[in-house]
Length: 155
Image (cartoon, rainbow, N blue to C red):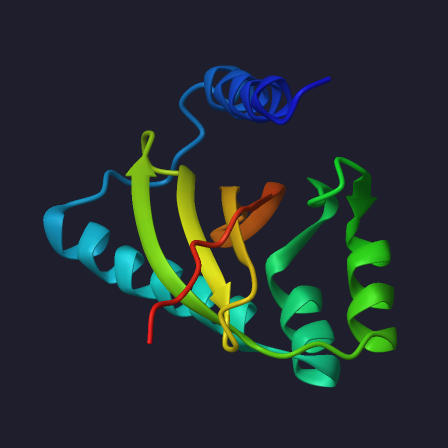
């Protein structure tokens, strides 16, 4: 399955979750709430891009839902437990969050499209994260990552 097909499957799944949850939301968002949430999601995504080692595994424990399912840059699926174990065992340089596009679907579903680059400029990852509010707590329930070519730097 191509990366585009996988991304479509994640977005379609998120939409189905949104439709199935009906009217369970506790309150309607107003502009101030949405602005606050945009800041929250930007901070969480930035922390995830920059975190390494124990800080990364701690953050993943906090933000990933127990039933989280992601697809890595090689097209392999992974769970929350696998993401945390990988973060604890690997050594990697922090990334820098390049850009985000945050889309709200009702009061408790958010899809975020973004990109991040390695600090040394050798890789760029484009990703989509699906966040769902459950019991007044926001959790990342799905992620799709894709490694993209990096344009050569000019000196």
